[in-house]
Amino acid sequence: MSKIISVHSFRGGTGKSNTTANLGTLLAARGQRVCIIDTDIQSPGVHVLFGLEPEDMHHTLNDYLWGNCDIEAAAHDLSAKMGVSGKGKVFLVPSSVRSRDIVRILREGYDMGLLNDGFHRLIQMLDLDVLLIDTHPGVGEETLLSIAMSDVLVLIMRPDQQDYQGTSVTVEVARQLDIPKMLLLVNKTPESYNFADVKRRVEATYNCEVAGVIPHSDEMMALASGGVFVTRFPNHEITRLYTGIADHLL
Image (cartoon, rainbow, N blue to C red):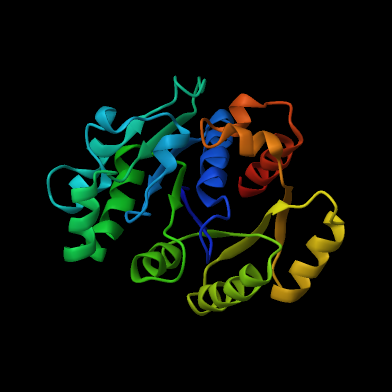
């Protein structure tokens, strides 16, 4: 049974795309056929983590939404590049980073129903176990569609007052949409914090399970989106924590 998992945050800068890339890679390493789709069309970025250059994108999500290709034609197989072998696969459907394409989307919009159809076609044509949706931050129309279609919603937040308030809005919306499963992930947590206390406090605030509390990492900052963290630092504590979250999603 295929799963659709949306990774979302109310605000930008939470590490949403990093989380998506790391979880997708770990799930693929566990033998899952995974496709990550970057629906943050206004400010795409997941491709950077995978080292996929704009000139190497034979098609993008934009091309599909404009009727220039089938959506599976925009899926780039990055399995070998990420060291994934055996049954597992990791695909990426990137959004275009060309300014004219972003401006066109902002001016013209796109058919939300077509995006919905594309999700299901990807699952069918690529025989996916997991479709991971990297969403646009906030609560926009395309984000609501992605969340509403999800079997699991992973909400990323930081231990920050603005994030606490914004996450409350998203949790309330998700509950109104009857998402089957919702998990919180507290990211970029200062080392000085009591992580068990953070977990208890966040779970009590939102009445929602916290799948993990991830510490701030100088190594993550120094990597500067120059790769997928779990492949660069396989023995790091953050990799261990991401692995636990990936196992929980399975």
